[in-house]
Picture: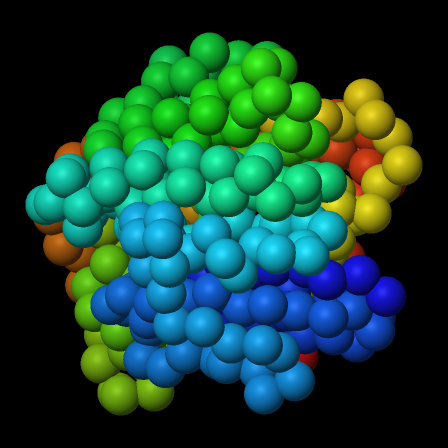
Length: 297
């Protein structure tokens, strides 16, 4: 049994990973400040050691790393539009907060840090399918600050010998997904609107395509990255997607309700589609469920 720390562990993806770690017999420390405003609730697991702490507060954060073998870093300002509205907040949480996590891990002799990155790093200039060796094309403060976190991870690996692995998530959906507000993930927004008897709001023409990835598959990618014995993964970036995509209009048709179109948003990519050859070959990870299967089950 090992002791792991999960930042953002009361949130959407983090809470699923906390559950998986506990089910595998591990001890888990959860750090979350409940600042994600699109979450209607937070999912604290009473089998974990829970701390309501802001990752930008190093003095409160660092002591929690004592005796920790590995860290999963989910905590972030995690939405594009709120980051456009408040770039300073995004920079504070995603850059300073990530640096604090890495420094606390280094100081306490943590063996490995798994970082939650984003497919928004690929922007518009890269043509799908998107590969990890493509150049960054950051369109907004969210992607800039998350890529800065990636660079900090690589630097801590090169300069300080802290083993880090970067996972770039595509559009994650599933149980516990955020539902609140206009900037929640689209699957959650559509389901909330249908439940309330409202028309689904489609941004722009709805032809933008997304690689929708199931939350428990994302949690499992984190688990595999932490437990892999392949040392070649350190300092590397891996896409976590399905290798398939769907338009927002096709998603709306699957969920099945009236749609209304709203104006396009700044700073968003037209299409996302992951090339998952690298994570498949180096970590043995495969997606297990499609969004079509999840919506119809």
